[in-house]
Image 1 (cartoon, one colour):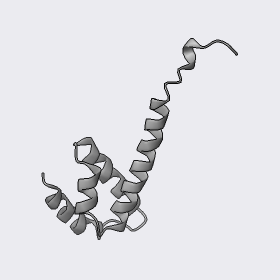
Image 2: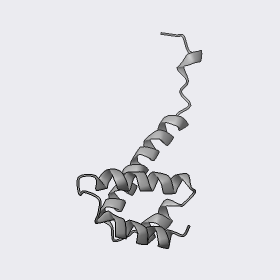
Image 3: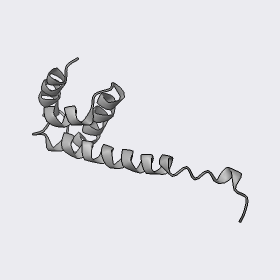
Amino acid sequence: MSLDMISEVWDTLRSHIDSNDRKDAADSLINLLIDHNYEVSEIKTEFKGDKDIMAAIKYYTEQHEVEEEYDDDGDDNDDNDDY
């Protein structure tokens, strides 16, 4: 499915989502799109006018950077018993 179509569906549905639940819905949509191999830059371009989606992308990228930093440090304390 194209991002253009997904954007249209989101735009139509978002008005039916309670404003208190939109953040969670946007987070879920971003995670789903990322899981289906859409690039963050493509998502940003397609949803550039939607503040809920932009906030969800920001949150996703911040969380992803933290995970990468943790994974990249290579600090495996299982082999280090020198306390």
